[in-house]
Length: 150
Image 1 (cartoon, helix red, strand yellow):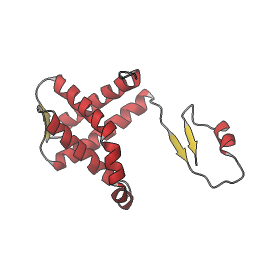
Image 2 (cartoon, one colour):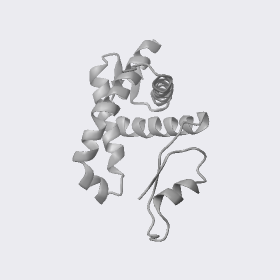
Image 3 (tube, one colour):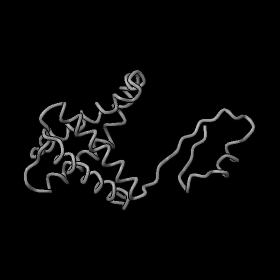
Image 4 (spheres, one colour):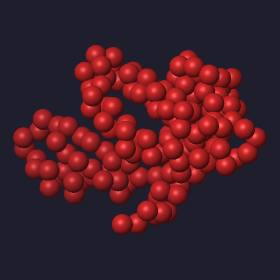
């Protein structure tokens, strides 16, 4: 099992940048004057996003459906508060700061991943009974991105 792949290192660097931007933009998020704290906070956020976030999403699925996905931002805020609890020199001053910080981190991560060209999975649903999934995959116009046809 490869722990440090290039993709994970890039993701960690993007998360570190996103946490840095959030700490400098959101008044309620602060860190001690060393970048080690930001790297540890990004590492903790990455681990929590990998291990805990999928569980929270499954548990909150009814709320996600009712709020059209907006509850996803509350999950991000809870994880950011948990990072502040786990990393002693990283501080979040309340839920509002965590919510805004989560929005900033999501935006910066998405924008940075778009700029560096990170691959994404595309899910398509169609009602066409005439074409098989094999034909649809061969006629893909999505530039080498994996496609799942439903």
